[in-house]
Image (cartoon, rainbow, N blue to C red):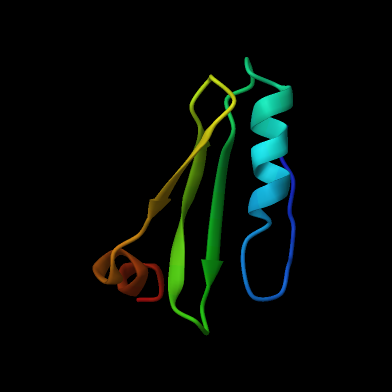
Length: 66
C-alpha cells in the first residue's frame, strides 16, 4: 500500500500512529520532509502499535537537495 499526504506545518503523525495501532502486522514506513523548515525523516511502525521517528541529520537533508 502506498499513499501521499500533504499537510501544513508538520507531518500527519496522528494519522500514522493510528494506522500503526490498527494494523499491527502492516510494516509502515513514511518519509516526510519540509524543505522550508529544513526537517525530514522517516516514521516506521514498531509492530506493537507504536511509531518510531527517525529524524534526518542536517547532512542527510543537505544530500537530498544536492
